[in-house]
Image 1: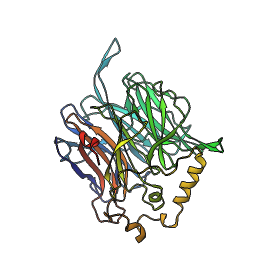
Image 2: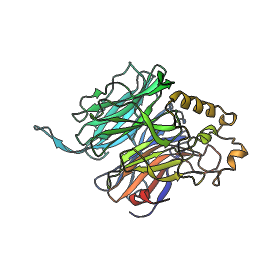
Image 3: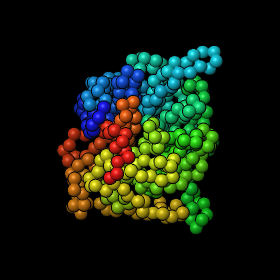
Image 4: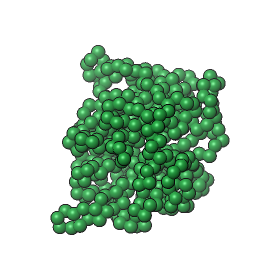
Length: 412
């Protein structure tokens, strides 16, 4: 399907006055060409720990129109069921039994801090019915263990990889669960991914690396990008299918303290990243999620090009990370100083000095949690939460952007 689509597909209050958040969605193209949208549906308020379930919608025309919302996963948790990922388990055989192609749903039951459950359900009839849930993780040992959504990856080997993050005391670090038997049993990667803090070249501690996203590279290695407080996304590599990971290093993608989406472009083998690209000044001004950008890497994440904006208050398409130092302590302190500026305390009363910098003010201010899906028709579909925090009077909710894959490579 040709043409561009930009629309709010799940507006707030769609299912009632308490429906004040629809977010953390994923998309899947079904064998009959329909698109399934699944999303975290909050039915009482907009808080991360508010009551919520997983709803879905179908599109039969490539995303231009959508069905009414329907229930996919009722809330079976103390707080909410959500943070979901859709993926397919391809057909195969273990030598004894033929295994069918399955649509799969990974999600999180958010209970108390130590009892989040990551669960897997599968569907043999493309979301009409679902299997009983299988639990991936052990509970009661780590705080707030969670997957971000849109991150589950089936490797070329058939291994299912689930990037997750958890609290280790005051540190948020990442690791992986993986299964080599289609989700029946699970193992945990060795160690955790976190940032090493140094002072004068000496290690003094660790900093957060969370909400990881992973892609499989051309040579079989895995690339992981993580959310950090360092003013840019950081990356880690694995050459053993996700069992062990390298120490993180800067990715070169300027970012606020927010997550990214990462997928392989099926027609080229390149990488596509979608994330909140912002400068340190914008972070300090409380605009850390005002720009939703995308970029392509042709060299397995070593460098990035073809920068575009899906959402922005201005026309800046590329921002270089401001801090280039081997001393992580300096990076962390600099970011904290910017976040503590006086006018960073509110998102609804911006000073005129901030407003005057952006030609499209007022507009979408807060955009986050992107997900990516490629279709057989040659399009890329990107969905993310879009909110204006009452500054613009726009329709807000879950936003869908559809572009031809060729658009990703156009010069800006």
